[in-house]
Figure 1 (cartoon, one colour):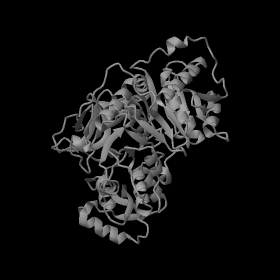
Figure 2 (cartoon, helix red, strand yellow):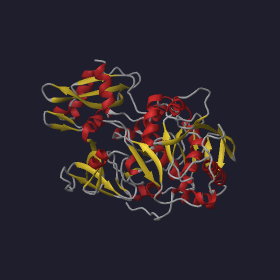
Figure 3 (tube, helix red, strand yellow):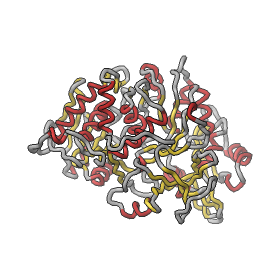
Figure 4 (cartoon, helix red, strand yellow):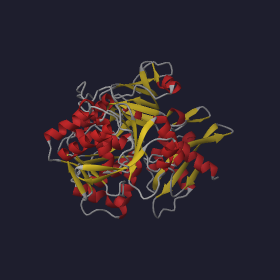
Length: 521
């Protein structure tokens, strides 16, 4: 699916264009507490950017931002990139040691955090690394206040020149990958990368000034930041942030209704939480949504069907990575084509191929490594030549995912290369087993993983969360699996649990789940 991208235009340009076209339209709402128009947002971003530059922030400086989902974060993120610096959003829940790693790896020059009563781990890490830090909070609709007021040595800078414009090649965002098998890798993304991605998202979902969404994912992650926030802002659409600064199932629908939301995007775990709420405490009336989007992990067809049935909107599964500035493929809107359950759709604004180990493009229906290239893809990991060598080969970015393209051009994911279970030479996709488990009417959540085995090398295990009131046992699960899977794919062991370890973004990492249950055997 093609996308319209203006070469040379920056993300800053696109958001300013929206502000000029729709100055009085609501840009950001915090539940029913605060509302900023596009004009107000533009003015406070300019004012904050000037303050940052006057305080010593230089083009290319990395500014770490540790906030919940607040309006302060939105303003600071836009102000940092307006000042031609680099925003490095960080999870507020990190430990001191984790903050030390991320601040060091990104070479941060300044840390800005939310105003808290306590001395935070982020600030403690900054002190240890001799990095200046400050807190920031909104005083009124026109100004952001910093404490301490002066946090960098000021210099004589011509701010008019500095703020005259941004460059397409400017690095403006520094994120880290999830690190499924190693320490997280640093991913620098440019204005051009983000323009390509948000333009692709706006185009494929037909976002306009008449749209509105509620942010349910953390803005320190590429999914919430790019797909939820930035794609909306370049479309002059409205964005609502929960007053708690994070997703809450109890306030989600009230925020959706009060903001006249037309769509939302989330990971499968959050979709399931929303479905649980619907099952136990349904709303009298649900807003009429254009679509529901799912990304960042595989969505089982059974969950997709439940979502569509419950909320009367098409569920569009997408495929994305930090290295691709988020979006790579998606199922289209109903008026634009077929959306297939179990597929992540078609590539948007970039090229995609399935390659074998020698870099040969495989035929339709054949499984291999999914590779992409396009203006949205990073130029490479920071200070990591080994990772770059492995990821950028044959003129493609290698995702590490196994999949295939069907005869209609839809992409189907089989699993991560390093997560495929090799049982006596038979390669088993944990995603396939997950889908079968989740189709059981008494299974709430499930994850499949490989464990060491003397006879087969690896054996299939799974962890299952029962639905409320269920007495489902291991034998019943195995009987169900044997009816729906080849014998060698059926789990050898079923762990029952009330919770599954997740990342901060709600993703379930198989390696972590496997370690958790094996260590507690």
